[in-house]
Amino acid sequence: MRSCLSLGLLCGLACSAFAADDVASAVVATVKTVDKGTKTVVVKTGEGTEQTFHFVGRTVGHGAEATAKGSKDAFEGMKEGDEVIVHYTVKGTEKTAEEVDHVGKDGMKAGDVVVKSVDHGAKTVTVKTADGGEETYHLTVRAAKETGKGLDKGGKATVYYTEDAGKKVAHFFKTS
Image 1 (cartoon, rainbow, N blue to C red):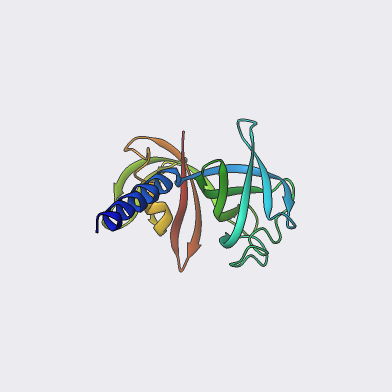
Image 2 (image 1 turned 60 degrees about the horizontal axis):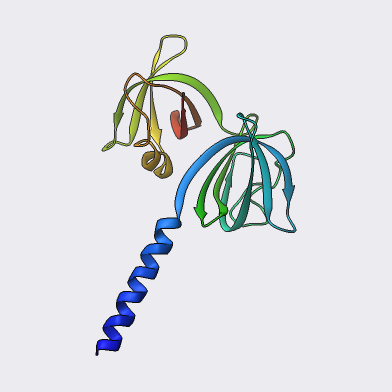
């Protein structure tokens, strides 16, 4: 009995240690290289740093031609120089792309905004646009989780979004 309790405690501590390493983030960057053989992509951020991401079977791609679920298709249609948003997790030193959003033609649109309000219950963000108008964006599940990180009333941000049935759907906010 004592051995079982000790083993259970040890397993619990090991699991919590691994969970602590699994950190979620996102980066807006430009594709530098895609290597389908090693299932990696190297991107360059606006700050000039390069990051390497692994893509796996669960990696989802949005916005480029023929993107679909699956590691061999997550970067399909994306090429050197394309702007992307990589949503990723970090475990130890390895970065795994969970979702890749293509920005530009046939992909996400971007706009500079000032946040007026965030409604976590309704999963919406109301913003003031550069031309002085007011718009409400519906949040994807991922964006709803990420809006708690630095998206404040009066804060400036770039919103990356798509349009679906006349509604603007925010996928990511990059705060200024």
